[in-house]
Length: 160
Length: 243
Image (cartoon, rainbow over all chains, first blue to last red; front, side, top):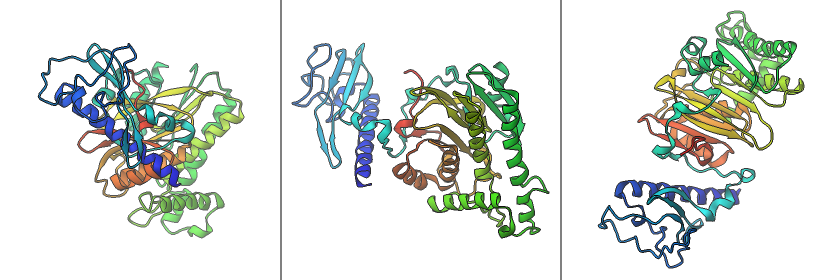
């Protein structure tokens, strides 16, 4: 139980870091300047495309918004937290961050050892274009037969 | 999914999908499962066992074993959720509808399994139980609490989760009681449909505090719509949609 609690704490920390990262990215329009876990540390990894990260893009919020990021996958320095080590990597495509991951923690994210964390705000881009999702079942607050008449599920059932 | 069967029961509608046609007698059996729970546990039926308990014609302890077992199950969940989920209405009436629909879905799934169906899903009033092949996942749409004709988002359900349930303020007057200070809608993914359904109700009723405790201590994922419209979720409830 204590192990589980610790891992949950780690995951919660990572989630907070990721969200912080994303929020910072959105706020500044310049993602690489926002957190200490970015590709600026002394142990920063190299980009998967061979592009060195070298911390060059991180110069604070005063940096010009027009500067762009190099494409590639960049792994940031490890950061010690009360719950363990957290390391963040980002994927940059066309000069913009397209993905953020925490490779250090992925080992703990196995389904067999599912660790939950507090529910955290989902990124806006995750709550997107749901209308185009291909689904055959809808979960929603109880569809009464009356409510069902106006529900998506009834439309799906008719379309089957 | 190639086979599709829809029928009305319990004041709502059941949709069954399967990857192969289901024999008619199996579908009748599944319908019978829901009908039996409906007869025994529906407060809107004046002659149901639960209605006779509600109006004093029948003592709870004199009720049939099946009803008492369901009541015991509900009391267990009341303890597990520190009262956020409860089978007792504010007026004291015992209302088991918070678990009965899920139990019917569970038993219907068992009937499909026994009949040899290997890939199926049962949706009843917005709660869904799936049986998927190993490694498979199914994308489930989540209704927008502000507009039922729209999807809010979609989530992927895969092992170990098999069930998803959603509670929302549109259930007001049914079986959700409490101040609901924090969320307009709560979706829970869990290994079984009873857990998913009960915890969705409990988090809606108990708000953030219950949400925090559930996600810290139980192997479930949650997706909640806060009253301000923001959507929050645990990592496993993140979305099935391509970025």
